[in-house]
Length: 119
Length: 106
Image (cartoon, rainbow over all chains, first blue to last red; front, side, top):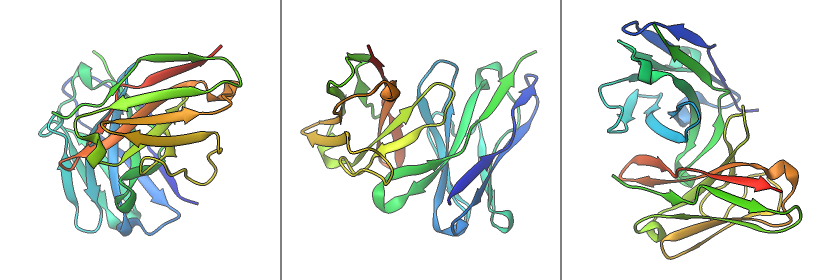
């Protein structure tokens, strides 16, 4: 069974750094891209970016380029999303999701990580 | 930037058919997926490649496309289908989501 298990909720202050994780199991980690999706409170889904774990090739939405960094650790089948300096506007639920390249779709989703940034 | 447009809400009576549309420039040249999201839950893939249904998704969910519009149809809508539905497609290596349509089963 494919599973994407995300790290727990975080409460941070503006200016702090943060790294959240998404651990995959039930399939060969290096065969699939993993994407991150943001959902602000009461809002829709926004694509943040995507990474291929085999070579850490990461691509970003223009809206998030330079604002976040996506990385992967093949040895523990884990993908990360990190911020160097959080803003209040980063408050949102963040989902990781597996991308099926041949089907142009996202077939499995993590449970989400709630990030709250407040002074 | 590329945009996918969805109506904000659709109301349907139990047992009736709900049709949810998603339109975008040259969408006929792309593949679309549909995701269902219930309150407090992660999105769930219900249709991919415009009309394919993943295993485990009920047959009452179907997808179609015509011109620059893709449509998700829920036949015999059940109260458990009440959710927000998002369409998604790729444009120049960027994944784009529609704004979402809230389906209310009255």
